[in-house]
Image (tube, rainbow over all chains, first blue to last red; front, side):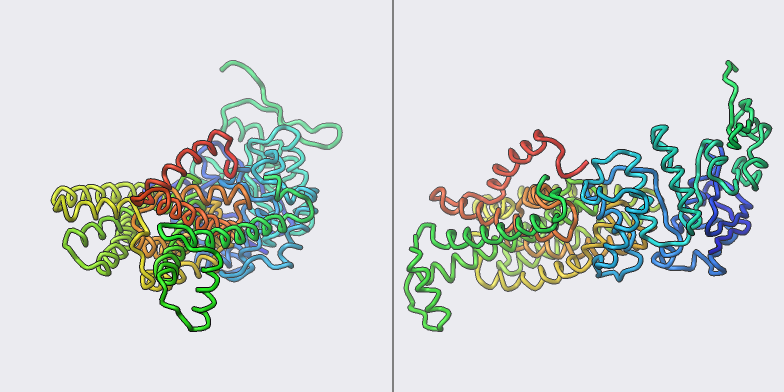
Length: 258
Length: 344
């Protein structure tokens, strides 16, 4: 699948957040979205998911105009993983994952045995089997994030949009969740994820889009986009980009009083 | 909560609860048909029933009491309780808040205003009920129209605020009518209606609300899975393929129809729609597949129990709204003190 935006302008009628956004997301690829607070990452996601009308330009999904599609059709093409949240009610983990099957069923239908299988399969693929009867509200934040990713897998959309999947997770869970995301993209679906940590983009990103000052300021391979100069311009801090002996690239900021 | 955490068979215990509650409600209904100002023995009741079923009524006083007075009243208590608790369960999911009752959008206050106006104008009982029904529907329609007109804000919040404001307005109009009403003739009737009672239920009342309750219930049962999804919030429901705004209109319409029709025959009865879904959620979890039937069963049983108490515990009938609050409010406090089970 191929999601493409052309000269997309995003924001609210009284306040435009960014314009001239041209980006492409493909299956099998992890696209990382970086940018300072307020640069429009969440607004862009909401627009891509059809929750917010574009102010201008177009979004096409394999050639079809996204904004013209009904909700159910959008949901079959793009799945959304919100930040791990607290559901208002203690649904079981399995119920939450089953909700990912909604777009594949009629308005009056409850999940079928096939949907239950799909939900269990999605949980198992993330190593979460055995948790299906637990209450979603009583598992850890890292587990919750994986449950929401499992829900997106059960939704079986070729593209998954993740809004800061590592936010509010502890160090270990951040790495575990990102490793799962990378493995996931290698098996098929495309992933678009936003993050605040350049290291995450180096670790799992095939491509990086950098949003700042009302538009895309750079796009390309992580090493080309996340340069010390760009990070200085966006965040006002000095960083070193270092390649470790193992081939991993990390970002080392300089801590000092400014 | 442990009942449905049993690994391997989470569904069975939940249905077991629904099953035992059904049996308990039936037993309670049989008991309620026997007790009262004119007690009937079980043997007598069985004889009257078989005679009635065979088409051979015996014309006794016991028969009249049982078939004309008690049975309609029991049926009404079950229907009213089930409808209020079912609507409450749906509203709590819809507004993502376990402290919401079916009154949140003003349906009861609106029905109250309609009924009070009917009493004030000295209309016949059927028109008072009609006014109550229309008052409930109209109030929610006004609330929804206001919320729809306010754009660009969190829709659920606007809806609740509009409900509070319109409800307060209707409440003040009720107060005005009470001041203007004849204090000897009309005011007692108004007060009694606003506190809720099933004492004047006739068989015709039961038959007249049944279609409206069913018309509201059927869409809720059919859409039960989507109501689950909607309880995650509008944006998330949309990304899962649900037209959140449209679904909410349908669900509000269906629950309003159910609530307005029962309030029209019973008067305003609080607490059932708030507390019963809460207990049901503790027993069977938040999935509407099970929450809706469990809430309705609990509500039906609870209101039948309270109504039986209301007509047997003293010479003068106690208004239902007082009893449901007396039992419901302390129980709810106890629930709160026990911990936040059933929601997070």
